[in-house]
Length: 147
Image: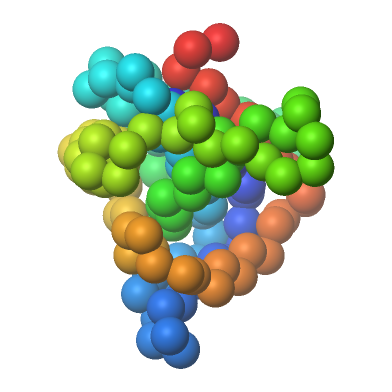
């Protein structure tokens, strides 16, 4: 599994003009599920996101996780993170997991983060979403359960 995670002042996702998820301060996580990913990959990535220390402490150092600052997580399923652009100009998505498997593992990822006590909002799986991310910093990290 792969995630692009951004520290945000606020973030929102909507489908067809209707807001489906919205957070204030916290993390926006765009998550892609790869062919061959397992529950262990979802657990690993959820643990990393939930514990990611990218918020500043009293000394101005990135040393705090979202739960320590009262933050939340906006998790968005995003198969395009698995796009392979090495050949030609059109991405190949053959590395992205089939929809049913991706939805199951994305759900596992979300539930594992919720189990830590963090509030999690989401988009709608397999829908065209408008995502508003107000990146704070900017702080952006890439996580991958296979690297």
